[in-house]
Length: 267
Image (cartoon, rainbow, N blue to C red; front, top):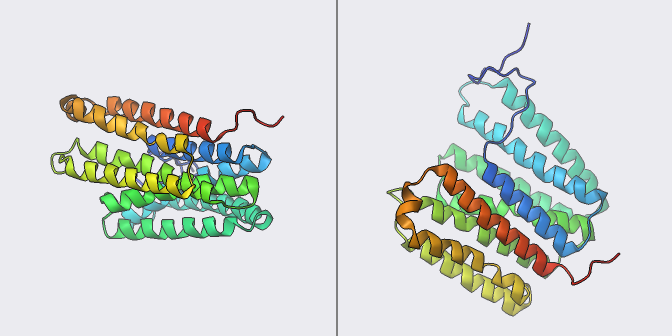
């Protein structure tokens, strides 16, 4: 007799769950690549760090679905929350044993998960402040892979994490321009203004190089295109918006990686 999940889908309990949020995977990949680029190395431990980040993200999806549908138990979601989360915790514990600095980042990730759960319970998961916070939490992957590669955290790594958070969270405001209730440009303009000020401060402090700081211009260019073609952006099919956001995210990631790499990588 085949065990079937009670979630309403016809997948067996042992069938893996996967997050449907492809954009979040893109943010995670960009965070990992920029962190590894800043560390200027890629080792077998880097791969483990990537696995931890990916499985941690995958564990969040079934956990949140179960919490949303908490009036009934969903064996499939509970099972894969445990599997993804258990493997991620085990590998993270091993890496933290080898690189104690990762304890701070792992602790921050745990806090982020708790905050995510609280937001779901209070139906605030789609609130702007919650979404910005969660983008910053995903971007912790930058620090995790950097700490794994170097065994330390530097102001430059923290600066890159903040820059990544500012860039990827900018999508919150452009996407909300498609909705009638959040179609005002005021919030988006304020956010990008604050992002410019914070990035300038990071450059002034020496936490970002000039060229790395200038990659925030990709977010400003995206906003300018959205404003210029606002009618198209608000009315076109979402799949085109997904591609639009993806192209800018890939451009930012490539430029950010290039600006933190040395002219010649060590042989």
